[in-house]
Image (cartoon, rainbow, N blue to C red; front, side, top):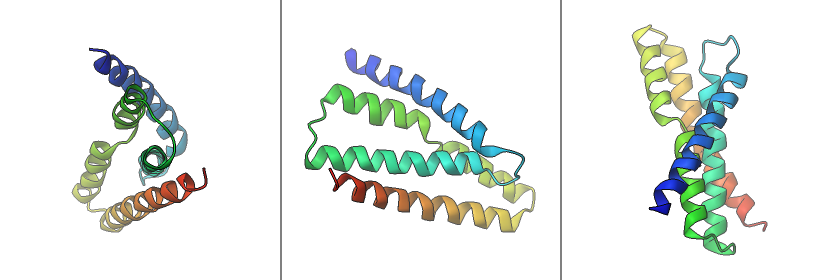
Length: 122
């Protein structure tokens, strides 16, 4: 029962952080920069926590659930990314579609890699 509370509380916080950060990053651009920024940061953070916990940091199950499943699960925005990218196709914004697709995939994978590297520094 406590697991559900940890995930729920983390999810609440992650969703609020996502709203604040994506709104701040978006600005007037047609390219969904807010979603891109959130996905990059979420990828980095998830990688950092995961690899740090595997190497040296003892992370209690409650903290893992709170941070990775709850907070980062609500913070990252794959479903939003998919919808925004599909809308670019619907609007015949082919260049923006390809740029958004490439940037999200390449930079989020880079976030995973950098998070892993950063975890090795501790």
